[in-house]
Image 1 (tube, rainbow, N blue to C red):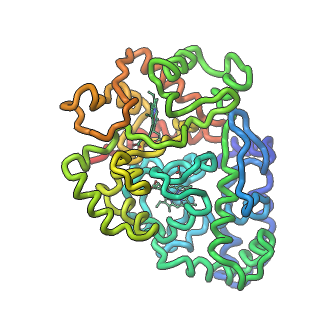
Image 2 (cartoon, rainbow, N blue to C red):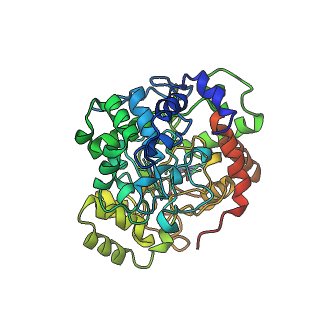
Image 3 (cartoon, rainbow, N blue to C red):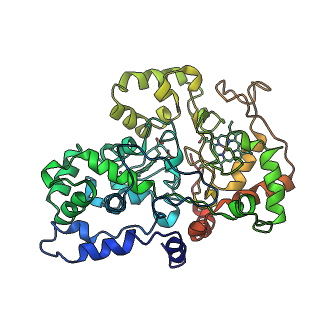
Amino acid sequence: MTKRAIPILLAAGALALAPACGKKNAAPKAEAVETAAADIAPAAAGVSIGTVPLGLPALAEPADNPTTTEKVRLGNILFNDKRFSSTGEVSCATCHDPAKAFTDGPLAVSEGINKLTGTRNAPTVVNAAFYSAQFWDGRRPSLEEQSGDPFLNPVEMNLPSHDAIVKIVREDSSYQTMFAEAFGVDPAAITIDHVKKAIAAFERTIISGNSPFDRWRYGGEADAISEQARRGFDVYMNAGRCVSCHTIGETHALFTDNKFHNVGIGFSKIANDAEKVVGEFLRVAKTDQAVDEAVLGDAKISEIGRFAVSRELQDIGQFKTPTLRNIAATAPYMHDGSLRTLKEVVDFYNTTISPHEDQKQDPNPFQSGGVRPLNLTQTQKDDLTAFLETLTSPEYEPAAKASLAGQAKIKPVK
Ligand code: HEC
Ligand code: HEC
């Protein structure tokens, strides 16, 4: 993180993470391997436990994994540990980089070990704690469950099993101390569940509100956003109908209905052989791990979307409504990273054709009913884009600037 972000984090009471970690682990410097966790720089991210930034609701935590300072500190180090990949080069933070609002822009789809590419765009981890299911297709019900998958996926971290991780943390003296503090366990009693819980606890502190929009809508600051952005808000709520899926409430806004829709992205990739692709998926998808490998390993299977979870034909091509918070910092967009700029996103929504109105122009029989062309004027489109740019939290403003600058470099998909 940049210098700028630090006062904000401190203001929010987030001093816990970085400084405490650094001090705690600086002391023992015996063998390199044993002290490796001590050398990992934690991300300076997150707010203090229990703090609710302006514009967000209170965050629930699972009864069996309460968020504690010790756990969050440990989770932060685990999130940044590259030893949990087969090449020793990839950590969670490789694809969820705090400096890029916890994404890997400008990549359209993520790169794991040996630069192997997956099929999907890395969503931000910021505010992921508020989703009722994780991943674009919601195939994991919780942050705890989600965090086990990347370690094993062959195009991500590619470990043969979770045992490799357990071995490392049991033998690393810094980890021994941190697991004892977080969970009260002896090294021999550490399991992968502890690892997953610590990572999830860390992620529950990566929440972020207090954007210009929040200050305007919920903080009573009439001038926190420009007049153009205020006009854009009107487009968002009315002519653009964005709010019907990217919801905004009376006291807070998550910008997601936590549901799945087919807005029409990517379907052309399987338009001619959807049946065959579904058949191939069903043939291989015998376990949760096999599903994870199939959807991230095969560009066509990726496009079945929510079907991978529900196995209902009408769910083909449905993806989770993503939050729009910090959207200016996380280009490119959509589950396949196929839209490079917010302008392209707005153009996409403006011209997408509903199958119910013109089958010939869009042969996507699965597109969600509410999606139809908007016929917005150029001014309305510009206003809407300006509104979307007000959703950046102060700590991700540098990331938004960098994302904007990097958009020209994003390679078009296919
Ligand atoms: C190689 C890049 C890569 C690595 C490494 C990686 N991720 Fe991800 N992450 C992704 C991609 C791509 C997705 C979306 C996959 C999907 O939806 O099918 C994702 C999705 C997620 C989500 C779901 C967010 C949402 O909006 O649904 C979370 C949470 C997450 N990752 C956390 C982690 C954690 C924790 C680790 C380390 C254990 C990790 N990731 C490692 C690329 C990566
Ligand atoms: C029918 C529900 C629905 C409506 C209406 C809708 N969206 Fe979306 N939005 C989604 C879904 C679902 C996705 C993910 C689609 C995908 O990747 O295939 C998405 C993706 C996005 C993304 C990309 C997010 C990211 O992290 O990549 C942006 C930006 C966006 N929508 C903005 C808008 C705007 C602006 C409007 C109004 C013009 C709008 N949406 C209307 C459901 C909707």
